[in-house]
Image 1 (cartoon, protein in one colour):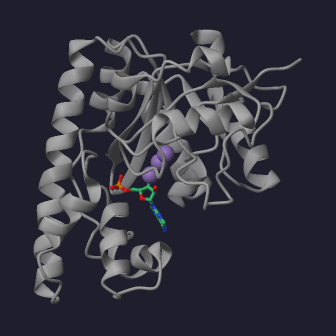
Image 2 (cartoon, rainbow, N blue to C red):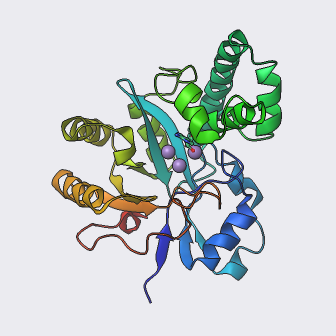
Image 3 (cartoon, rainbow, N blue to C red):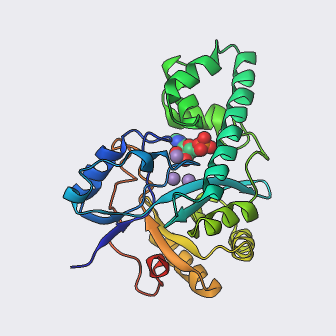
Length: 276
Ligand code: AMP
Ligand code: MN
Ligand code: MN
Ligand code: MN
């Protein structure tokens, strides 16, 4: 029997809807045997591992999804197979979380200017113990009736070029990859097709990622077309990168990101787990 890997998903320690125990239960129901929870800029989910983990017969690979930028594009780098006791990783998370808070203040100030009342206070309540994410702002704008849903919140207020798009905030791509490597992990360029770059520009990003020390790229992420998959396989093989795959699961409500949705990597890819 082939094992099903899902090496990218989120819990409510970042912008996911479920706690780790529920994510593990759902992943296991979907036949996943190797799972990596990759919350945005945090490894908090790993600090309270449920003792039902072994019962689910699931192998958990410590992971994270770091926010970074390349030129003016917001880019995500997944770190897999991390040593969670690395002090560099601890410092990295602290730095990124401080940036998250600073960004939340900036977004809140802009929202106040357009009439939103006490956005910072409310967004901190919504985020709870999670680092503040734009998804939490999307919830705020939805509950106050500014938008109908999260998609609309991103389209009008939070997405690229809008008020919530605060630039030059995160650690740069070289530093982020260095953090992952220093924690003994493998750096993976997340969902390459989501940056809306031309093929030439994506090639340049991949070159920058490789020269930073990146070793793998997500070939399969959430729902995508066969054409995208074909192009990413070509790109990975041309650049000598290992391939990864993941649902980018956030919530059972998002049908396009289901745990365990990708059953296997295309056979021409070298799997990233060969490096674990
Ligand atoms: P942040 O990490 O705070 O920059 O927020 C980015 C997160 O927002 C992504 O990881 C997605 O989960 C979510 N997101 C980005 N774009 C959209 C969108 N158009 N609609 C809904 N959620 C989105
Ligand atoms: Mn997210
Ligand atoms: Mn991402
Ligand atoms: Mn993600």
